[in-house]
Length: 110
Length: 121
Image 1: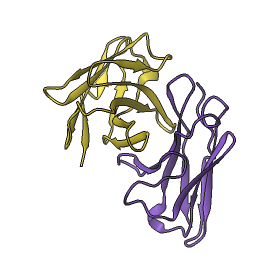
Image 2 (image 1 turned 180 degrees about the horizontal axis):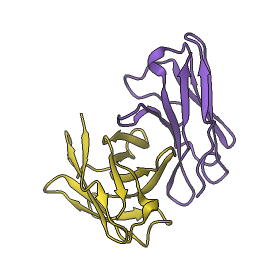
Image 3 (image 1 turned 90 degrees about the vertical axis):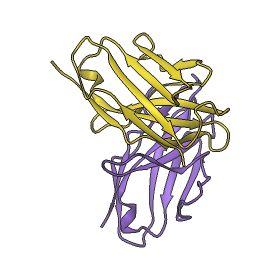
Image 4 (image 1 turned 90 degrees about the horizontal axis):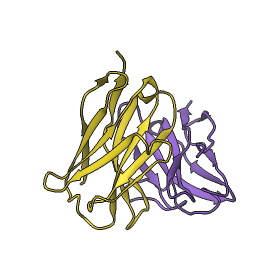
């Protein structure tokens, strides 16, 4: 199972919006709404930010949103803040009953 | 608040067995609908799902690692464990334990801090 494809990095100024793409196949992202996104800061445990494509767990700011079109899922951070600087990776269930992750995207706040 | 904590050796020799334990606190490992998962992350790479175990002992492994990996669960201690045999340098990674929630979020909602395991002689 190949990893999901994410851009290595994205950047934006405070207040701007950034979008991270996550491209899979018809065997994972394209077939299931079990797509989630995680935030990872150095030395800390990954934190769930979005589940089931576009749902936010309690406590996650509403400036984080998710969507999906075909085999590509996306995470958008609106009103970028300094504290959002971190690595983000996506995750999808697959037709092999396994889970696959993206390679991760580093978000830099300029 | 559920918390997970990995423990085990940080250095393993090639060809030996990597063994890690995850201790769960703040909730029962026997709760219905939650699968206990091992995930690893090679330096500079995205995470890799290793597999999961249910409190009943049923397991599902990543096909790429199935021949070398074994999970076990000890409900009395609220712990689950990973054994990965015949390790090589390619198994050097940060190993995480996590909870897969199939009830509400259908995702990995809680993670441990991760533990770096280096395979080297």
